Figure (cartoon, rainbow, N blue to C red):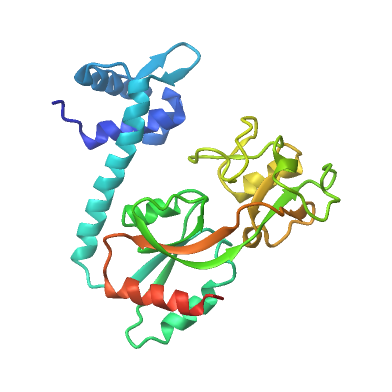
Length: 287
């Protein structure tokens, strides 16, 4: 069986995400010909074509799609093993919590206060993650716990406690046909251009099938800009829609599945400092 090196997977993963040899090489900090040769060598070793090349575009074959999916998990596993080995040799003097900026529903101050009252409380470092990668921070060991939104975030491999459940609102430009409504339904939004979050399948809104024509966005700033331009609308948990941008309109979505803010940690993580922090968060949650 062919053996792959971690670096080969990293090279291919960059190309699979960028679908452009130049951008992928720049991201990796190597020359484009070197990346091209590395991918060719990988294809030769596996005995399959991973990418279809032309003068204008790069596309993944079915084998390339499979390696992209499974290779990503392999790289996460390697990174997690390294990080956890390093941490195992350190004294547990602090806990790392990853959150999305503004993604704590105003609960974090109360959680930290409740935890600080414990006699064996440790220092809590706040790590800011992106809109879609916070669960990976826990899986690969960069963080111990994460504040996540369900069902948007993927909880595979994680345990969690629900801290708050809330409704959703549609975020619209002021001249939108629904902006004057007191509430809307999922049927009203069925053909609207919902954003496609980078790295997430679908549009993140249960009950609405992806229309396929919304813009791809990576964070809240990009999303706000697209809504102001009239290129998209959004359906978000109520707490993520605060503070309200003065140029946008928020309308409750009456029949949208409710969203849960959860505290998540690794399924195999049985450390006392994690359990104490989880217990403090549940204690401080609104119930």
